[in-house]
Image (cartoon, rainbow, N blue to C red):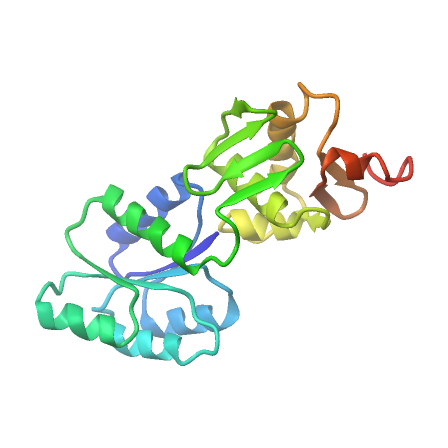
Length: 234
């Protein structure tokens, strides 16, 4: 999941980015309203965290421009403006939630997860064969056995499961899970896929994560894997 943080104060930018990335999200940052609007038009975000006091445009103007799009992500306003009138105005203009500064990160993270659940039409529980991923509790089991995953491993597995049977390129995985562009040289995806395989495949005879030669990776239920011609995937 990709989140846009619109915040001009560098200290808060860094704090939010580190915290959200540690929780498994990809994060983009905009320091002003103009950049935020450009990013929203160019990228499909799952959530926008929006400060109101920006150096160029007022945050409420940015909110209105986001809401004018045919498809717009949930917006969480994060602002030092704590008057009731400010909160009411923000919500009336289309914000999905409003959190005042200073704030506790655990509360912000809880609100982020609540908004993402609300905005996601996809299931909260994913299952492929005997592999089950609980998106809300962030738990994974295979054959009823708990599997402990790091945040990035969880995000990659969730992306693979939401796209079961569909080959995903390394570029797609990097851009979805990490806040970076794939440069064609990094082996970060391959490293994490090896980690995932060691946790969800190595102990079981039926393997689920497949390497699609010349493309990347995909996840299939064991019964479908068995139907593949020998040599098509590994």
